Length: 489
Image 1 (cartoon, rainbow, N blue to C red):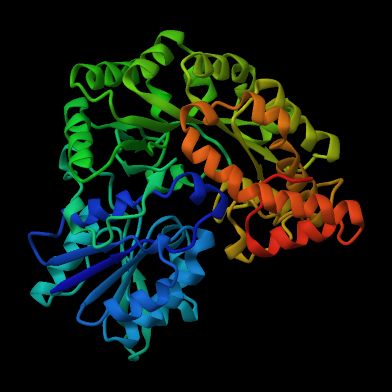
Image 2: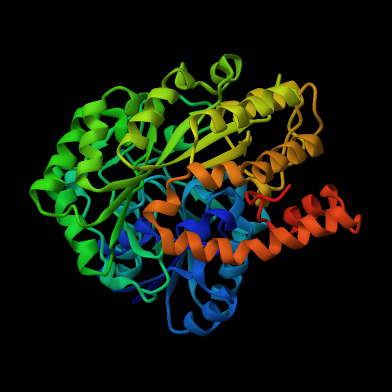
């Protein structure tokens, strides 16, 4: 039996230029079936023509797996059709198929999807492969959705009960040798890979899907395993490590111990990046100093909003109260700071959106990302926004956090989109050029990006000055291209 696991080819272009990271979840799945079958992983999100690649590669595989977030789901269906036409069965997993399994099962999409592995996939996927090798029914495989014929011979998708979360001791080390594509994955020109140190989060952010996948649980891998995994990633070519944990700072003392373990293991020559809460980082200067000593040079910081009303709506507590201290601690250790700032909440007017811009400027954030509040399927926030009548679009291809899919009580969908675009466009100016840390930490990457973008910006400035084009023209151009986070206005 041959299995091919495909990453989603659909990415957020602005982020992809900064960090293109191979998929960790797929090599974790591969590790749980490699003793049963031949399994390969193809990270196709860096390819120029991913459909052509899949068309050529898929022949000879018995089972093709695809993972998808909401904005990636439609393209996953296109790839599933390619796989089905080549004679393979298909299995879907990830956030969107998990949360929308019943809707998918009742739709025509189910014709392209033979199985859905819901939630945490390692054990469910292994049992699926075992059942197929043994020629047995999938009835009883927890966490699996599959097709079955009813008494009238009609096909329907059956959803087995969910699977309890695994003990982390049961989760095998990723099988990076399964990767077919090993080049082109970098952050600031340094080859990068992912290593997880924990799974889950106990917080109740209303816009987040993590609790729907894992419940409000936080499970920690042993620090010894994490160090072993870092060594394995380095052995496979990584010079930079991204920790994709859902909330790595939920246990700040543990993160500090991990940093010390990195130091003791002699792994400080690698560059480490992670996402973290503002409150977790702000809780301990000693922690952040230890992160700097261990080799951390990038943190995506969840700030979300300066507006207390919005923080309450998002379920984020007093996050902005900690932003100043968190950013200062990180910058004191020469760590690049990216922040997520969410606008487009129910009571927002234009002034409320610009508050986040001014916060990012005051904090001298290196890469602020001005997200737009997004009503992801099944989340508590979507239910509230639908009840208010503020959701304007259910085309999930636009559910990437950068496109407006709602209106506020004061702004239309188009106004939310345009104002947010202007915030991104105005941030990366000469003032930003003076204070950002990227140019000092990664000067070659920064110089190349300046050379790439300078002519583009110059043309736009000239077009504006000569009246050949308007700001709205540029807005529509960027909206069409999908690159919404670059400057110029």
